[in-house]
Amino acid sequence: MRVLVVWCPDWSVVAALREAERSPAEPAAVLAAGVVEVCNWPARDEGVRRGQRRRDAQARCPELVLLEANPDRDARHFEPVLETVEALRPGVASLRPGLLAVRAPGRWLGGEANAAAVLAETLVDAGVWDCRLGVADDLFTAEQAARRARVQECELVPAGGSAAFLRELPVEVLEADGAEGREAVSLLRRLGLRSLGDLAALPLDAVQDRFGAYGARTWRRTRGEAPTRMAPRTPPPDLTAEVCFEPPLDSVEAVCFSVRTTAERLVTDLASRQLVATGVRVEAEHDGAVASARTWLHPRYFSVRDLVDRVHWQLQGSAGLRSRHDAGQVRAPVERVRFVPEVVEPAAAHSEGLWGGAGEELVERGVARVQAMVGFDAVTRPVLQGGRSPRDRQATVPWGERATALRPLDRPWPGQVPGPAPCRVFAEPAVAEVRDQAGRAVAVTERGVVSGEPTRVLLDGGWQPVLAWAGPWPVDESWWSDGPGRASRFQVVGADGRAWLLVCGPDGWRVEAGYD
Image (spheres, rainbow, N blue to C red):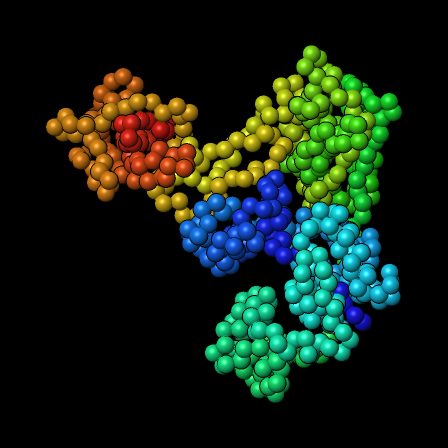
């Protein structure tokens, strides 16, 4: 069995730039734990390399676009590529996002070279410009051939020629195997083995004794003797539901009334597969083009009523479809509405508990009714995120939406005030003053040294003695952040027994929060 491999280089960066709606020509890198994991060719031209720390990469390329690693995002954007290949050749095996394998077509379309050219042309038409293909007797050789092919071209390794093709390749190609491969490459270099041919020339027993099971598998791969094991995936069912309007509808209420049957069909289709949708993309088309599209998330799962409400909110809030004169009319008539489930989960994971869950369901329905009256974005809920000040740690998201793009809580956040957290955080910090025993204003130096012990504090227009205080907790936030720059926070207890969180910054003292 011959194997065809399709490789899309730097796929993590490609997927991240697509999701961020940035140009693929911008220098970009995907970071994991502050280290460059993947970078594209414009970044490599500026000296950015895999394994560099964030600061080193930015020093080499100040215009570098930094993107967070997200395996789910990479897999989601690679799904259309798999579907494109499956339309031409069933039995696709997804090795990882950006890399797939399929049984070589043989005489299909006049041979392997012609079939690879057709496949490359189809991928380019689908928006995958940088694709490279390789064909060989085994999976490992086909992957290495794809990695050495030119853009939109195929590298063909003749039958029985795997060992000769791999012989001259450097041992660094094994680094694609992850940490185990990088460790093996380091040891091979120290042993003076520079190519895969040098490794293949060694006895199997010696390689296995020195490198273990991984070394034995690699030894067989370098000789072209490794068996090809592929697990072709089962294409997911098409759960999309849509409805066409003839003639197109220009009323929001008419559209919502007409999509109810389609929403019922979608929910029923999911229920027959024992699934529920927690994320649905709603698309509205006008004149053959998508005029409004948005992905909606649900804290539980979507019912028919929830889907109809989302269509209503989206059409009312869409700038491309909203009428300037009548909120109930759309400026561009809608000719098609499509529901695309993007996140589906087993229904058993959302089943009610032993004693039911009517209380939560009533709350969700009540909030949904309020949203229908005042607007989707007008009803929010608070969530906790990472940050140094209490105000930075607060965020609000619309009810029904999942919290995304929040600062992580598991970071150290130096300068963060320890618990307990204050009960009240003021939207606009009030002006305050703090004096020492001699009546001088208390300040904090650049080294975090307090000029004097706080003894009096001006709060609510009156002075009162300070019974206890703690701090400072200095923080120096850079100019590009939203923070106060260089500041220090103090916990102060006044004579009336109330405790306050004060911040001393460039503009003086302010009351940031209160402990009730």
